[in-house]
Image (cartoon, rainbow, N blue to C red; front, side):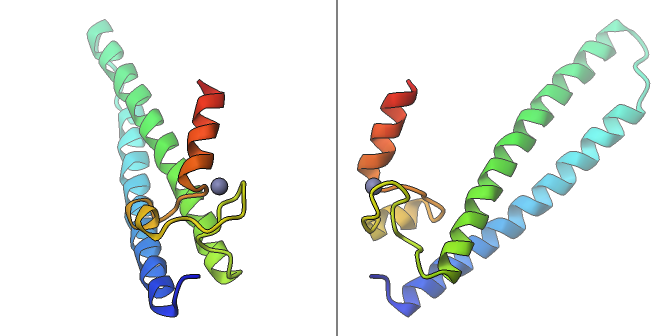
Length: 118
Ligand SMILES: [Zn+2]
């Protein structure tokens, strides 16, 4: 089990990460809104804008997925289930948590899932 100090450390990390992503999301949405307000002058402009919007969208998507994972982890801290693998219910190695504080699965389950998806 994780000690209280360790939990406090992970909670702090998660909250910092959450703040960072939220401000990233704000500035990306802001940038995309201002892109939309600019009328393209010619075809070249139009293509550039579309490309930038596509990049913007995929960044937004990635960031919001990460944000969701972080929120799941914060909820698990509240429920005293943080650090437990979602799939096998074993404890996730603390070294792995330090690298990926919002990990849902232990390494072996993660690898199994990735194999299934590929
Ligand atoms: Zn597992």
